[in-house]
Length: 86
Length: 427
Image (cartoon, rainbow over all chains, first blue to last red; front, side):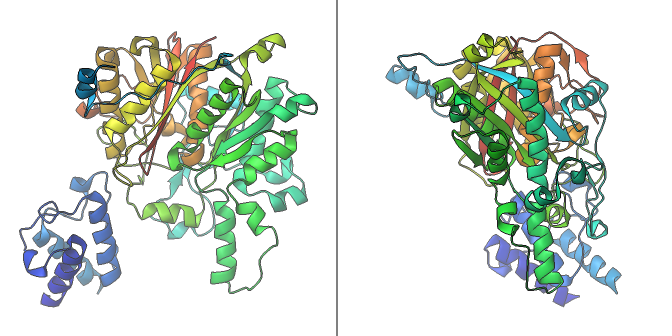
């Protein structure tokens, strides 16, 4: 699963215009300077990269099945969706 | 204004410049006709009845490829039968947004009793709002050339899809030979259009303007594009409710006859309401996130233009999209603009019933303003389930209310940060 982790970190780093080393498991989207539109864009990029559908409504991010609290939770959620795809 | 006063105003809503009154004075502007088609009904009477009964027009969407959409609800007009109202040649030329507009315009003009064959036609025009124009025509023809691989499209694709098609067909239908054009400011399009029509009649540039707007974006490509932003609700439009989870799209049109007040009086017309003020502002901040300051400047600007004070306003038809961002920002803007009076006025979003009709929404919502002024009935915000401390205003939840109001505002705050607010008075 390291591969998935690195691909996600690269995508988020590109979105945040940061060096990939600055994207750690405990970074929150806000820490990385990703606003709501940036988040929607990042989720789209992840969907494209892994050919998955991420359940996420920008109106109620906290209620979403997709936990965006920090990079660790995002990576775990993407890994789960990729595994479910089989 | 003293230098000190200018300094104090910095950071707060800065005033919109006063309209310069011409030597001959400005004309008063009457509304003498109204028409609509939308998910609640195919005319004004059916729509106003739905407002009174708090009926929801949002249903399961029904069109080609809908099964490929994540969002499957909308304020769709299911019983739309163009062949009943238009001949074969007209249907070939009219995209759905033009068909909606023409139906609404015919109802409005019939009510006004105006005829434009003579001199009046030279000083009458039409200004309409639409965000996407002939979206169904784009969608169908892209499908033809990309998906089906055909190399030929119908010769009328361009005149059918262009954003000004509806305005042009209205001008042709009624012989309006004065100023006509189309305004595209996303969700504020028809408020901008009606505001400009108001200014043109007020300034004397036209004696009569047909105005309003229309949208027909409920097709596969239209809804798919909106899905991308992840701001749409999958189940309901619940403006101002704490559990709101996004907007729901609708479709339809609203058209009004704005007429020189003295002209209307002289011919004994039934005046439905008077348009008294209009203001526009730009957030100049973000392409999708709204700004309370920008909204507030348009609200206070419209009142100033109308010569109204906050305590004169009894009702506001809200932009009220049902998104997390809009509703709390709009309530903050209203609370700040009205101060203590914010607790005494009513504010409702009829998008909960007809859906967000994008470029046509302000025109359909204008009907709720006229219902309030003329019939003393406030259309409710339906789908309201849980109070939100960030939207702590009287949002007329779930049930229409009887109330006498003398002046109202209609808010529209578009993506792109373009705001347009209109003020109306009871006659």
